[in-house]
Image 1 (tube, rainbow, N blue to C red):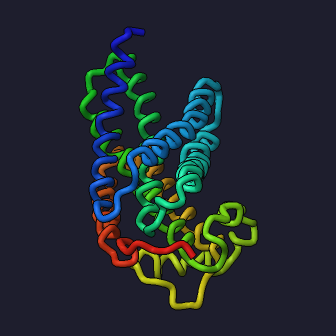
Image 2 (image 1 turned 90 degrees about the vertical axis):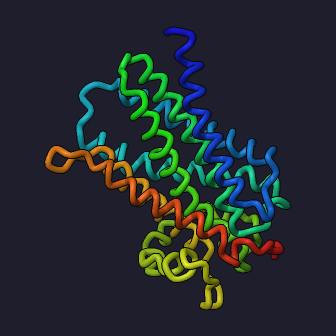
Length: 279
């Protein structure tokens, strides 16, 4: 492999990563997070991406894998595990810098930063593979990976991070009992409130505090995780399937733009810009 290939691939992957980090950092101008902490969050996202990359490479070298198995791993399994890993990476850093986590919107900032680190590692791998293939359509791949895949990662993680922060600042359990926030039980999946995504629809996405006298934190965080996983799975399906010979990727553009406008709007919500005290 030419030595220039990993250098070019690193630059191609790093430029959009830095751009999106600056974009979200400037959105949080009222009480910005320390750059050193965000850098650690970015590195945590990079670290959790490595096992998935190794697994994808391993699966790609196994012959005779059925289409059903490939579809399951690509669409659902990886979507679920990746969203969990990115959120855990951001929580891991936040638990070591609790004083900097003082706004609901901080959940978006840290989750998005971990997602950018995750997407950076993915993009680095794909750019190296593409450059080694000798294909000439570099611009299309760069645009899709930088403004499609990376934006999608930040939106999915942003939703999960926002809802985790919403749960973090509620009073039901101690703020940093992450063993409670992550130890989901099977019964939560069967909980009627979770399946209806009630809190997510009625309160969090509208930026309105819950009027129901409290809620189960595990259920709330799980709602956010389920929403992120479902959106990630739909994204994977749209990039993999064709309808009447036409790839469905073009449908992602308005959806991603709408998601980007929504998450930008959430930075302006009163509950998100107010600096909150940990209870």
